[in-house]
Image (cartoon, rainbow, N blue to C red):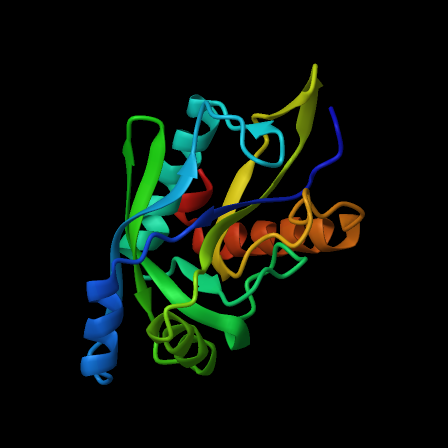
Length: 197
């Protein structure tokens, strides 16, 4: 099997102007972005990858446990590691579901330092994106990379946009992937968390 690596994909968040006006008019009210595209199955993305539905939807089902427990945190900007750093958390996925081949959900911008930056960016009408982050391996088929069954969804991060094609496929981070797997095994041993099953 191919080496596991950090895999991430970017989708632009479609922000209705009324959401921006609402955020500006009510700065103390939590800002929640509803029914946003987070990821797609069965569709070749701009990085030349396809997520098979059985792999992606399995991970969404597992991730929904974190969503229901208010633990589905995302960071501002894309880290090059599979570890979620609490100091960089800007938002929380509060709902996630599948509609056709789309993975959609609701995003609550948190009142954290990074969340305040993200909210300010949204209030200014700047286009931002949401990017899935996971670890797994790829199988090349022609000019397409198929995400393999060992894929594990970690988070959805807030990002500006990919600066270069393939910029969010981060290779050569085996140390961080190994560190993530070790932490995951320790947590699984302690919590016996159903998320890991």
